[in-house]
Image (cartoon, rainbow, N blue to C red; front, side):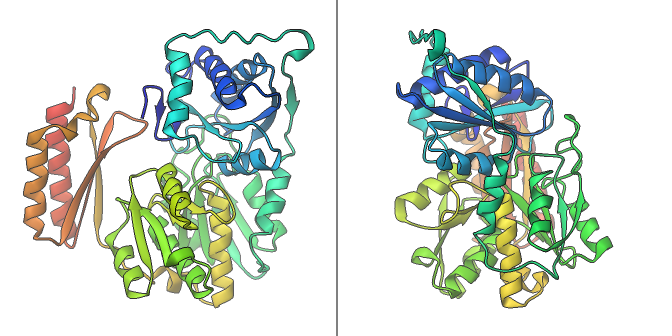
Length: 448
Protein backbone atom coordinates (compact mmCIF):
# COMPACT_ATOMS: atom_id res chain seq x y z
CA UNK A 1 0.00 0.00 0.00
CA UNK A 2 1.46 3.36 -1.04
CA UNK A 3 1.04 6.94 0.10
CA UNK A 4 -1.74 7.85 -2.35
CA UNK A 5 -3.15 4.42 -3.16
CA UNK A 6 -4.93 2.50 -0.40
CA UNK A 7 -6.65 -0.87 -0.56
CA UNK A 8 -9.15 0.47 -3.11
CA UNK A 9 -7.50 3.27 -5.04
CA UNK A 10 -6.96 6.87 -3.99
CA UNK A 11 -9.45 8.27 -1.51
CA UNK A 12 -9.90 11.43 0.52
CA UNK A 13 -12.11 14.44 1.19
CA UNK A 14 -12.94 15.95 -2.20
CA UNK A 15 -11.40 19.34 -2.95
CA UNK A 16 -9.27 19.09 0.19
CA UNK A 17 -7.27 15.86 0.06
CA UNK A 18 -8.44 14.75 -3.37
CA UNK A 19 -8.19 18.00 -5.33
CA UNK A 20 -8.80 18.60 -9.04
CA UNK A 21 -5.10 19.40 -9.36
CA UNK A 22 -4.24 15.95 -8.01
CA UNK A 23 -6.90 14.32 -10.20
CA UNK A 24 -5.35 15.95 -13.28
CA UNK A 25 -1.93 14.56 -12.34
CA UNK A 26 -3.45 11.14 -11.69
CA UNK A 27 -5.07 11.26 -15.13
CA UNK A 28 -1.78 12.07 -16.84
CA UNK A 29 0.28 9.56 -14.88
CA UNK A 30 -2.34 6.82 -15.21
CA UNK A 31 -2.64 7.37 -18.95
CA UNK A 32 1.15 7.32 -19.30
CA UNK A 33 1.61 4.05 -17.40
CA UNK A 34 -1.49 2.21 -18.60
CA UNK A 35 -1.47 3.60 -22.14
CA UNK A 36 2.09 2.35 -22.74
CA UNK A 37 2.50 4.91 -25.51
CA UNK A 38 -0.46 3.57 -27.48
CA UNK A 39 -3.36 5.54 -28.92
CA UNK A 40 -6.71 4.44 -27.65
CA UNK A 41 -9.39 5.25 -25.12
CA UNK A 42 -9.92 5.19 -21.37
CA UNK A 43 -13.40 4.86 -19.84
CA UNK A 44 -14.41 7.08 -16.91
CA UNK A 45 -17.43 6.42 -14.69
CA UNK A 46 -18.58 7.99 -11.43
CA UNK A 47 -21.09 7.68 -8.63
CA UNK A 48 -23.66 10.32 -7.66
CA UNK A 49 -21.52 12.59 -5.43
CA UNK A 50 -21.59 16.25 -6.41
CA UNK A 51 -17.79 16.32 -6.40
CA UNK A 52 -17.77 13.67 -9.12
CA UNK A 53 -18.28 16.25 -11.87
CA UNK A 54 -15.27 18.25 -10.72
CA UNK A 55 -12.98 15.23 -10.52
CA UNK A 56 -14.31 13.74 -13.77
CA UNK A 57 -13.43 16.96 -15.60
CA UNK A 58 -9.94 17.09 -14.08
CA UNK A 59 -8.96 13.46 -14.64
CA UNK A 60 -10.43 13.53 -18.17
CA UNK A 61 -8.31 16.59 -18.96
CA UNK A 62 -5.23 14.79 -17.71
CA UNK A 63 -5.93 11.77 -19.89
CA UNK A 64 -6.70 13.88 -22.97
CA UNK A 65 -3.44 15.79 -22.46
CA UNK A 66 -1.66 12.50 -23.12
CA UNK A 67 -3.35 12.10 -26.52
CA UNK A 68 -5.80 9.45 -25.31
CA UNK A 69 -9.56 9.73 -25.79
CA UNK A 70 -11.96 9.56 -22.84
CA UNK A 71 -15.38 7.94 -22.94
CA UNK A 72 -17.36 9.48 -20.09
CA UNK A 73 -19.90 6.89 -18.97
CA UNK A 74 -21.67 9.19 -16.50
CA UNK A 75 -23.14 7.64 -13.37
CA UNK A 76 -22.58 3.88 -13.50
CA UNK A 77 -21.67 1.14 -10.98
CA UNK A 78 -18.02 0.20 -10.57
CA UNK A 79 -18.55 -3.30 -12.07
CA UNK A 80 -20.10 -1.72 -15.17
CA UNK A 81 -16.83 0.15 -15.78
CA UNK A 82 -14.87 -3.09 -15.38
CA UNK A 83 -17.13 -4.89 -17.87
CA UNK A 84 -17.26 -2.05 -20.40
CA UNK A 85 -13.48 -1.61 -20.30
CA UNK A 86 -13.15 -5.14 -21.64
CA UNK A 87 -16.01 -4.78 -24.10
CA UNK A 88 -14.49 -1.64 -25.65
CA UNK A 89 -10.98 -3.08 -25.64
CA UNK A 90 -10.01 0.12 -23.82
CA UNK A 91 -6.58 0.88 -22.43
CA UNK A 92 -8.02 1.25 -18.95
CA UNK A 93 -11.09 2.15 -16.91
CA UNK A 94 -11.42 4.75 -14.16
CA UNK A 95 -14.04 4.95 -11.42
CA UNK A 96 -14.60 8.16 -9.46
CA UNK A 97 -16.21 7.00 -6.24
CA UNK A 98 -15.64 6.66 -2.51
CA UNK A 99 -17.89 3.58 -2.34
CA UNK A 100 -19.56 3.38 1.10
CA UNK A 101 -17.77 6.43 2.57
CA UNK A 102 -19.64 9.64 3.51
CA UNK A 103 -20.48 12.13 0.78
CA UNK A 104 -17.60 14.52 1.52
CA UNK A 105 -15.17 11.80 0.41
CA UNK A 106 -14.42 10.76 -3.13
CA UNK A 107 -11.93 8.46 -4.77
CA UNK A 108 -10.21 7.34 -7.95
CA UNK A 109 -9.56 3.72 -8.84
CA UNK A 110 -8.29 2.16 -12.06
CA UNK A 111 -8.97 -1.02 -13.96
CA UNK A 112 -6.42 -2.35 -16.45
CA UNK A 113 -7.34 -3.28 -20.01
CA UNK A 114 -8.55 -6.71 -18.82
CA UNK A 115 -10.95 -5.15 -16.32
CA UNK A 116 -8.97 -6.00 -13.19
CA UNK A 117 -7.88 -3.62 -10.43
CA UNK A 118 -4.23 -2.67 -10.64
CA UNK A 119 -1.61 -4.61 -8.74
CA UNK A 120 0.64 -2.87 -6.24
CA UNK A 121 3.57 -2.50 -8.66
CA UNK A 122 1.53 -0.57 -11.23
CA UNK A 123 -0.03 1.66 -8.59
CA UNK A 124 3.43 2.40 -7.20
CA UNK A 125 4.65 3.31 -10.69
CA UNK A 126 1.79 5.81 -11.12
CA UNK A 127 2.27 7.13 -7.59
CA UNK A 128 6.02 7.64 -8.10
CA UNK A 129 5.43 9.87 -11.12
CA UNK A 130 2.91 11.99 -9.20
CA UNK A 131 4.80 12.34 -5.93
CA UNK A 132 8.29 12.82 -7.33
CA UNK A 133 7.08 15.40 -9.82
CA UNK A 134 8.63 13.63 -12.78
CA UNK A 135 7.70 15.54 -15.90
CA UNK A 136 6.01 13.42 -18.54
CA UNK A 137 7.44 14.82 -21.74
CA UNK A 138 4.60 13.63 -23.94
CA UNK A 139 2.68 16.79 -24.91
CA UNK A 140 0.73 16.11 -28.12
CA UNK A 141 -0.65 19.09 -30.00
CA UNK A 142 -3.14 19.84 -32.78
CA UNK A 143 -5.30 16.86 -33.69
CA UNK A 144 -3.17 14.53 -31.55
CA UNK A 145 -4.78 15.79 -28.32
CA UNK A 146 -7.35 13.38 -26.91
CA UNK A 147 -11.06 14.09 -27.08
CA UNK A 148 -14.01 13.44 -24.76
CA UNK A 149 -16.80 11.18 -25.99
CA UNK A 150 -20.21 11.05 -24.32
CA UNK A 151 -21.06 7.47 -23.42
CA UNK A 152 -24.11 8.00 -21.20
CA UNK A 153 -26.05 5.13 -22.79
CA UNK A 154 -23.23 2.58 -22.53
CA UNK A 155 -24.78 1.22 -19.33
CA UNK A 156 -27.41 -0.52 -21.47
CA UNK A 157 -24.73 -2.93 -22.73
CA UNK A 158 -24.00 -3.82 -19.12
CA UNK A 159 -27.70 -4.44 -18.45
CA UNK A 160 -28.02 -6.70 -21.46
CA UNK A 161 -24.94 -8.62 -20.40
CA UNK A 162 -26.23 -9.19 -16.87
CA UNK A 163 -29.39 -10.73 -18.32
CA UNK A 164 -27.24 -13.43 -19.97
CA UNK A 165 -25.83 -14.56 -16.59
CA UNK A 166 -29.14 -16.11 -15.50
CA UNK A 167 -31.58 -18.42 -17.24
CA UNK A 168 -34.61 -17.91 -15.01
CA UNK A 169 -37.55 -15.58 -15.52
CA UNK A 170 -38.15 -13.47 -12.41
CA UNK A 171 -41.91 -13.14 -12.76
CA UNK A 172 -43.72 -13.90 -9.53
CA UNK A 173 -40.83 -12.64 -7.40
CA UNK A 174 -41.25 -9.48 -5.33
CA UNK A 175 -37.94 -7.67 -4.84
CA UNK A 176 -37.34 -4.79 -2.44
CA UNK A 177 -34.35 -2.65 -3.42
CA UNK A 178 -32.38 0.08 -1.60
CA UNK A 179 -30.17 1.86 -4.12
CA UNK A 180 -28.44 3.96 -1.46
CA UNK A 181 -28.91 7.05 -3.66
CA UNK A 182 -25.82 5.78 -5.42
CA UNK A 183 -24.63 4.63 -8.82
CA UNK A 184 -27.25 1.88 -9.17
CA UNK A 185 -30.29 4.16 -8.76
CA UNK A 186 -31.27 3.91 -12.43
CA UNK A 187 -29.75 0.64 -13.64
CA UNK A 188 -30.92 -1.64 -10.82
CA UNK A 189 -34.68 -1.03 -10.95
CA UNK A 190 -34.63 -0.91 -14.75
CA UNK A 191 -32.98 -4.34 -15.02
CA UNK A 192 -35.18 -6.15 -12.49
CA UNK A 193 -38.37 -4.78 -14.02
CA UNK A 194 -37.23 -5.90 -17.48
CA UNK A 195 -36.64 -9.38 -16.04
CA UNK A 196 -40.22 -9.59 -14.80
CA UNK A 197 -39.76 -9.02 -11.06
CA UNK A 198 -42.17 -6.88 -9.10
CA UNK A 199 -39.81 -4.25 -7.76
CA UNK A 200 -40.24 -1.85 -4.85
CA UNK A 201 -37.47 0.75 -4.78
CA UNK A 202 -36.25 3.27 -2.20
CA UNK A 203 -33.37 5.75 -2.15
CA UNK A 204 -33.27 6.09 -5.92
CA UNK A 205 -33.33 9.90 -6.02
CA UNK A 206 -29.74 11.09 -5.62
CA UNK A 207 -29.19 14.83 -5.25
CA UNK A 208 -25.40 14.91 -5.03
CA UNK A 209 -25.39 14.97 -1.25
CA UNK A 210 -27.50 12.03 -0.05
CA UNK A 211 -25.43 9.06 -1.22
CA UNK A 212 -25.08 6.49 1.62
CA UNK A 213 -26.87 8.81 4.07
CA UNK A 214 -28.69 6.47 6.49
CA UNK A 215 -29.36 4.08 3.61
CA UNK A 216 -27.75 1.44 1.43
CA UNK A 217 -25.72 -1.62 2.39
CA UNK A 218 -24.13 0.01 5.44
CA UNK A 219 -27.60 0.68 6.91
CA UNK A 220 -29.45 -2.62 6.37
CA UNK A 221 -32.26 -1.79 8.80
CA UNK A 222 -33.87 0.28 6.04
CA UNK A 223 -34.11 -2.57 3.52
CA UNK A 224 -35.15 -4.92 6.34
CA UNK A 225 -38.10 -2.70 7.21
CA UNK A 226 -39.07 -2.39 3.54
CA UNK A 227 -39.09 -6.18 3.08
CA UNK A 228 -41.31 -6.67 6.11
CA UNK A 229 -43.68 -3.83 5.18
CA UNK A 230 -44.14 -4.97 1.58
CA UNK A 231 -43.91 -8.74 2.19
CA UNK A 232 -41.15 -8.99 -0.41
CA UNK A 233 -39.46 -12.30 -1.20
CA UNK A 234 -36.00 -10.77 -0.95
CA UNK A 235 -34.36 -7.42 -0.23
CA UNK A 236 -31.26 -6.11 -2.01
CA UNK A 237 -29.25 -3.20 -0.62
CA UNK A 238 -26.23 -1.62 -2.31
CA UNK A 239 -23.36 0.70 -1.46
CA UNK A 240 -22.53 3.93 -3.30
CA UNK A 241 -20.76 2.35 -6.27
CA UNK A 242 -22.72 -0.94 -6.20
CA UNK A 243 -19.75 -3.28 -6.10
CA UNK A 244 -21.16 -4.86 -2.96
CA UNK A 245 -24.51 -6.01 -1.67
CA UNK A 246 -26.24 -6.90 1.58
CA UNK A 247 -29.42 -8.94 1.17
CA UNK A 248 -32.42 -9.63 3.42
CA UNK A 249 -34.65 -12.71 3.42
CA UNK A 250 -38.46 -12.53 3.54
CA UNK A 251 -38.39 -12.73 7.34
CA UNK A 252 -36.17 -9.67 7.62
CA UNK A 253 -32.98 -11.57 8.46
CA UNK A 254 -29.77 -9.99 7.17
CA UNK A 255 -27.71 -11.97 4.66
CA UNK A 256 -24.11 -10.78 4.63
CA UNK A 257 -21.41 -11.84 2.20
CA UNK A 258 -20.64 -15.06 4.07
CA UNK A 259 -24.23 -16.28 3.81
CA UNK A 260 -24.38 -15.25 0.16
CA UNK A 261 -21.21 -17.27 -0.52
CA UNK A 262 -22.76 -20.28 1.23
CA UNK A 263 -25.93 -20.04 -0.88
CA UNK A 264 -24.31 -19.41 -4.26
CA UNK A 265 -21.38 -21.73 -3.57
CA UNK A 266 -23.71 -24.60 -2.70
CA UNK A 267 -25.70 -24.12 -5.91
CA UNK A 268 -22.52 -24.04 -8.03
CA UNK A 269 -21.18 -27.11 -6.17
CA UNK A 270 -24.41 -29.03 -6.79
CA UNK A 271 -24.16 -28.16 -10.49
CA UNK A 272 -20.48 -29.21 -10.50
CA UNK A 273 -19.55 -25.65 -11.49
CA UNK A 274 -17.61 -24.63 -8.36
CA UNK A 275 -13.99 -24.79 -9.46
CA UNK A 276 -11.92 -27.10 -7.25
CA UNK A 277 -14.90 -27.22 -4.85
CA UNK A 278 -13.40 -24.14 -3.20
CA UNK A 279 -14.54 -20.67 -2.19
CA UNK A 280 -12.13 -17.83 -1.46
CA UNK A 281 -12.81 -15.70 1.63
CA UNK A 282 -10.78 -13.41 3.89
CA UNK A 283 -9.47 -13.43 7.44
CA UNK A 284 -12.74 -11.71 8.42
CA UNK A 285 -14.86 -14.58 7.08
CA UNK A 286 -17.07 -16.03 9.81
CA UNK A 287 -15.94 -19.39 11.13
CA UNK A 288 -19.51 -20.57 10.57
CA UNK A 289 -18.86 -20.58 6.82
CA UNK A 290 -15.70 -22.65 7.31
CA UNK A 291 -17.64 -25.29 9.25
CA UNK A 292 -20.57 -25.37 6.80
CA UNK A 293 -18.32 -25.80 3.76
CA UNK A 294 -16.26 -28.51 5.46
CA UNK A 295 -19.39 -30.44 6.43
CA UNK A 296 -20.71 -30.27 2.86
CA UNK A 297 -17.66 -31.30 0.86
CA UNK A 298 -16.33 -27.85 0.04
CA UNK A 299 -13.21 -25.94 1.01
CA UNK A 300 -12.33 -22.34 1.83
CA UNK A 301 -9.10 -20.43 1.21
CA UNK A 302 -8.53 -17.10 3.01
CA UNK A 303 -6.71 -13.93 2.04
CA UNK A 304 -6.09 -10.50 3.52
CA UNK A 305 -9.10 -8.17 3.62
CA UNK A 306 -9.81 -6.50 0.28
CA UNK A 307 -11.55 -7.81 -2.81
CA UNK A 308 -8.40 -7.24 -4.88
CA UNK A 309 -6.59 -9.85 -2.75
CA UNK A 310 -9.50 -12.26 -3.09
CA UNK A 311 -9.38 -11.85 -6.88
CA UNK A 312 -5.59 -12.31 -6.97
CA UNK A 313 -5.98 -15.63 -5.14
CA UNK A 314 -8.79 -16.69 -7.48
CA UNK A 315 -6.74 -15.92 -10.57
CA UNK A 316 -3.62 -17.56 -9.20
CA UNK A 317 -5.30 -20.89 -8.46
CA UNK A 318 -8.26 -20.99 -10.85
CA UNK A 319 -11.13 -20.49 -8.39
CA UNK A 320 -14.35 -18.91 -9.67
CA UNK A 321 -16.23 -17.78 -6.53
CA UNK A 322 -14.98 -15.61 -3.71
CA UNK A 323 -15.86 -12.63 -1.61
CA UNK A 324 -15.98 -10.75 1.63
CA UNK A 325 -18.37 -10.63 4.54
CA UNK A 326 -18.97 -6.95 3.67
CA UNK A 327 -20.74 -8.02 0.48
CA UNK A 328 -18.06 -7.89 -2.22
CA UNK A 329 -18.88 -11.09 -4.11
CA UNK A 330 -16.84 -12.07 -7.17
CA UNK A 331 -18.25 -14.44 -9.79
CA UNK A 332 -15.13 -14.66 -11.91
CA UNK A 333 -16.99 -16.53 -14.66
CA UNK A 334 -19.00 -13.33 -15.26
CA UNK A 335 -17.05 -10.26 -14.14
CA UNK A 336 -13.61 -9.24 -12.96
CA UNK A 337 -14.61 -7.44 -9.76
CA UNK A 338 -17.22 -7.45 -7.01
CA UNK A 339 -20.64 -6.87 -8.54
CA UNK A 340 -23.63 -6.21 -6.29
CA UNK A 341 -26.31 -6.37 -8.96
CA UNK A 342 -24.91 -9.53 -10.54
CA UNK A 343 -24.87 -11.12 -7.08
CA UNK A 344 -28.49 -10.13 -6.51
CA UNK A 345 -29.48 -11.83 -9.76
CA UNK A 346 -27.65 -15.02 -8.77
CA UNK A 347 -29.43 -15.10 -5.40
CA UNK A 348 -32.83 -14.74 -7.02
CA UNK A 349 -31.96 -17.44 -9.53
CA UNK A 350 -31.01 -19.88 -6.75
CA UNK A 351 -34.33 -19.14 -5.04
CA UNK A 352 -36.22 -19.81 -8.28
CA UNK A 353 -34.30 -22.97 -9.19
CA UNK A 354 -34.48 -24.58 -5.76
CA UNK A 355 -38.06 -23.42 -5.15
CA UNK A 356 -37.01 -22.53 -1.61
CA UNK A 357 -37.74 -19.40 0.35
CA UNK A 358 -34.82 -17.08 0.94
CA UNK A 359 -34.98 -17.74 4.68
CA UNK A 360 -34.40 -21.46 4.09
CA UNK A 361 -31.34 -20.70 2.00
CA UNK A 362 -30.14 -18.13 4.53
CA UNK A 363 -30.08 -20.83 7.21
CA UNK A 364 -27.60 -23.07 5.39
CA UNK A 365 -24.78 -21.75 7.60
CA UNK A 366 -24.91 -20.57 11.19
CA UNK A 367 -22.82 -17.51 12.02
CA UNK A 368 -20.75 -17.31 15.16
CA UNK A 369 -21.15 -13.99 17.01
CA UNK A 370 -18.71 -11.33 15.81
CA UNK A 371 -18.06 -7.82 17.06
CA UNK A 372 -16.29 -5.13 15.05
CA UNK A 373 -15.11 -1.98 16.86
CA UNK A 374 -13.10 0.85 15.31
CA UNK A 375 -10.17 2.41 17.15
CA UNK A 376 -9.44 5.94 15.91
CA UNK A 377 -5.69 6.52 15.70
CA UNK A 378 -3.23 8.95 14.17
CA UNK A 379 -3.10 8.39 10.44
CA UNK A 380 0.67 7.94 10.42
CA UNK A 381 0.45 5.32 13.20
CA UNK A 382 -2.32 3.06 11.90
CA UNK A 383 0.16 0.39 10.81
CA UNK A 384 2.24 0.61 14.01
CA UNK A 385 0.16 -1.93 15.94
CA UNK A 386 2.17 -4.67 14.22
CA UNK A 387 5.35 -3.70 16.08
CA UNK A 388 3.77 -2.70 19.41
CA UNK A 389 4.55 -5.44 21.92
CA UNK A 390 2.01 -4.18 24.48
CA UNK A 391 -0.82 -4.42 21.94
CA UNK A 392 0.43 -7.86 20.90
CA UNK A 393 0.40 -9.05 24.53
CA UNK A 394 -3.12 -7.67 25.02
CA UNK A 395 -4.34 -9.69 22.01
CA UNK A 396 -2.65 -12.84 23.33
CA UNK A 397 -4.38 -12.38 26.71
CA UNK A 398 -7.80 -12.16 25.03
CA UNK A 399 -7.21 -15.25 22.87
CA UNK A 400 -6.04 -17.23 25.91
CA UNK A 401 -9.31 -16.28 27.62
CA UNK A 402 -11.28 -17.95 24.77
CA UNK A 403 -9.47 -21.32 25.17
CA UNK A 404 -9.40 -21.91 21.42
CA UNK A 405 -13.10 -21.07 20.87
CA UNK A 406 -12.61 -17.52 19.63
CA UNK A 407 -10.19 -15.33 17.73
CA UNK A 408 -9.00 -11.73 17.40
CA UNK A 409 -8.34 -10.04 14.05
CA UNK A 410 -7.09 -6.47 13.89
CA UNK A 411 -6.22 -4.57 10.74
CA UNK A 412 -5.84 -0.97 9.59
CA UNK A 413 -8.57 0.62 7.48
CA UNK A 414 -7.44 1.14 3.92
CA UNK A 415 -9.17 4.52 3.62
CA UNK A 416 -9.57 6.04 7.12
CA UNK A 417 -7.38 6.66 10.21
CA UNK A 418 -8.84 3.63 11.96
CA UNK A 419 -7.73 0.25 13.23
CA UNK A 420 -10.55 -2.27 13.01
CA UNK A 421 -10.82 -4.71 15.92
CA UNK A 422 -12.82 -7.87 15.17
CA UNK A 423 -13.42 -10.50 17.83
CA UNK A 424 -15.31 -13.74 17.21
CA UNK A 425 -16.53 -16.23 19.81
CA UNK A 426 -19.50 -18.05 21.28
CA UNK A 427 -20.57 -15.50 23.92
CA UNK A 428 -21.85 -12.17 22.54
CA UNK A 429 -21.40 -10.16 25.74
CA UNK A 430 -17.92 -11.51 26.34
CA UNK A 431 -16.64 -10.61 22.89
CA UNK A 432 -18.31 -7.17 23.00
CA UNK A 433 -16.49 -6.30 26.21
CA UNK A 434 -13.22 -7.67 24.90
CA UNK A 435 -13.48 -5.74 21.60
CA UNK A 436 -14.33 -2.45 23.27
CA UNK A 437 -11.51 -2.91 25.75
CA UNK A 438 -8.95 -3.69 23.08
CA UNK A 439 -10.08 -0.78 20.88
CA UNK A 440 -9.77 1.61 23.84
CA UNK A 441 -6.31 0.24 24.62
CA UNK A 442 -5.19 0.79 21.00
CA UNK A 443 -6.59 4.35 20.99
CA UNK A 444 -4.67 5.15 24.19
CA UNK A 445 -1.47 3.85 22.61
CA UNK A 446 -1.78 5.21 19.06
CA UNK A 447 -4.49 7.88 19.16
CA UNK A 448 -4.33 11.66 19.40
